[in-house]
Length: 272
Image (cartoon, rainbow, N blue to C red):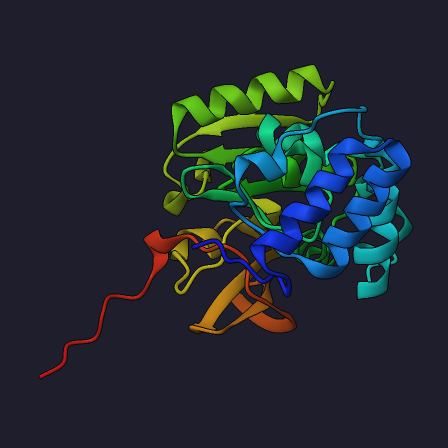
């Protein structure tokens, strides 16, 4: 489930939002900074999310996001930073939530799918160590933001989703943004996409408790899979699985608590 981590109350947030929509672009950018510093809102009320008044400067908000959420969290690879600077995050969220697209937020994009905070997404992509010749698979691609980021870092990206309507939306979005190196494919995400593998990089866009064996089996020699594993109710950990011959090793790389894929929860333990 998505969570609300704001340190402010609803009336205080409403006051901040009201100030934003009533002022000019400079104030809109200040509002973005305030969200980044003070909020982590997932399903904020619509009246706080619908842009009104002057058009928001998304390019300026994107720079603020990179400078305040990406670089300070040890994401300094120039190619990865450039991908975040050039990819319009607002294009991957519902229109009613575009005004907060660059805040430190997790934003639901469709049932069971959400954009992570920019920090968590950047840390996961950095851990995956994308390379220009890589064939990448994005599992549970949702709105396609992660696939779009990777499209400028690897050779080819396949965005896997299990809903035909989501895949159609993905295809339309990639086309509208002239993303030629990413393709959306429909199929059960737990099965991966064996017929298109093996993959040099697999990115899992939801925290999981368990890993389907198909995912690691579809890693190429030297291939990496980056995923956040849920350790307990309050803790998740970014982990990279790497194939070397018949062995797949794992390394923990950062702590995070992004939205999860509940389909991969462990069965409840039997209790007397």
